[in-house]
Length: 293
Image (cartoon, rainbow, N blue to C red; front, side, top):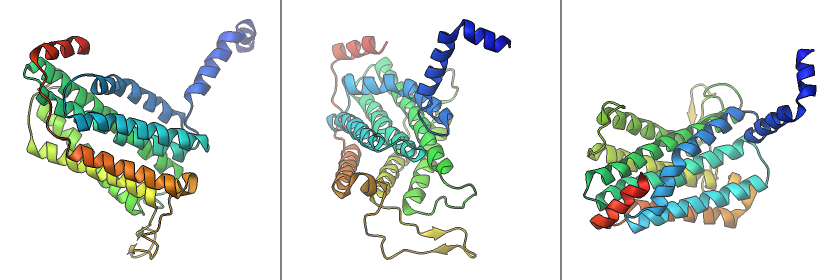
């Protein structure tokens, strides 16, 4: 009775709150994933904008950030136009993490070589750190979206395709590198930002490479190579492994799918061979510091 009386007394605020909650629940069935993805966006967007705008770093890696952002927006817009589903947000969240935040994180860490003063270098490393956190948040949402989209049971229908196994390996490498970086930086309250590790750099490169390979395989087809339900477990390679037959072809057509794959290959090539970091004169470094602060 009290609640009904209050609703009649204040109908507009209550309806406004419901409308706001409905707007935030943009991921079907599991709106909490949408809340997490919004938080990830708030975390990573400032550093992403700095990677796009500020001086420093190789030209090809900076262009790759624009490239990945454009590709992700295109994929998201075309896919959502065909309908909203939990699977669609697997595609969008993974694209956001791997095609946008990851190239921006790599560009940021490469950009530190353009500066000599420690404070500017630390600012670029901090951007790398925040962007890598955004990557992990995005891919976690993408992983949960596809995991929850399939029937219950483990392993069940999960991790049967080449795409999923390569993607799982990429996620494992990302997780390892996050833990490795956390160990090397020391205290999170006073982190050591200027450190160098050949192992960390190599593992990060491998993680990015396998993540983009998983993206391309996801575009191409969903070839299942393992049957976890069989006793004993059966591994096989079907005769149709080389034929395009994935969600991208079914939803967008073969030509668009090849364009997505080609754009991903180009992104990977430019990020693996980004060229040297341009040296920014000291006065421009000071300008960058002011913008960053």
